[in-house]
Length: 421
Ligand SMILES: [Zn+2]
Ligand SMILES: [Zn+2]
Image 1: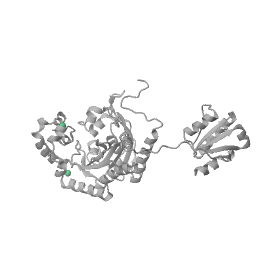
Image 2 (image 1 turned 120 degrees about the vertical axis):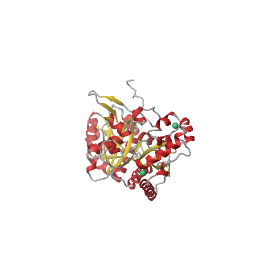
Image 3 (image 1 turned 30 degrees about the vertical axis):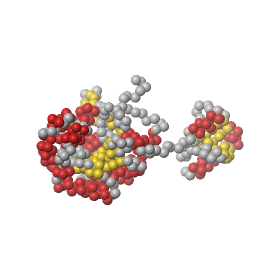
Image 4 (image 1 turned 180 degrees about the vertical axis):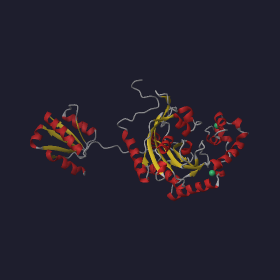
């Protein structure tokens, strides 16, 4: 127990962290280009925020939250997803009073008590974006284009964008009536989950993964065919903007959202890797959320992307993130005085923007060279007590094997030159 991380959690070990750093740097870089600023929200929130913000009828709230009472008797829930806390931040900090739209992003761990499987953990990490304050379909397209940009920059090709419009509370009300009528004589053939959704979330029945349910739903009425004029124009416009950017998509009328505050655009990026199709990123518009949790009526759109899942996608696509190089310099020391001199030298090099390291295990000279090789140092410097006396050290280029003698007192300048710093 003591030396095992809890089920559904995973360490990032030193030899792997460069992959995380690479994708996180990419997120930040892309967000910066698109004009999005980072937010950080607490690791836990009042349980009510998720109940209201994610929806009491959802699996997340009903089965998957890490909820506990704190020592003050408050009901607290570990961050179960990124959107509700971001919306809370938007309201609490009155960002709506600033120039709109508010464009934000986050990289955060989230906690859900799920059955752990590949790329899906109880603590997993999410990269997400939210835009508040704009109804423009151009913003929907911009948000989608951020995901495309990220996949493109990473070289992921096996990915398909599916989009849909799920209407607004007005046209959905009409549609729900029609859908319920259609389903009314099929209920005994639909599964238990479908039946439980009939009253509150009939649209989510379309989403049932059960094959026998899907067989019953083949000619079900679809929301896209019942959009009101406003929703129709919006959807057409989103598609136009995507076409302008040359972003391919398929309209997938079976993408649904279960809750009233989701509106208009819904999209998913589907990975086709190794036969099985799976959603690797999902998002859309949610013009009703901010009001739902107590803020002023504010349109919103966003997406969330699992980082573990993204790394798995890269792996499955054979995309390798370049491993970082070793230190610029490894200092091999011969003798006690040299060791002290080297220790000082490291500090000087590091403070001059040159990465450097030395041995700390009293290794033999041979073993120090071996270690320098192992950590992939670009140069190795050899310092012995005699060399200090003569103000010369040997500099070895570890790639070419070339060696030369250089002045110890000039070492920073010489290395800066060689390394182009
Ligand atoms: Zn509508
Ligand atoms: Zn079903």
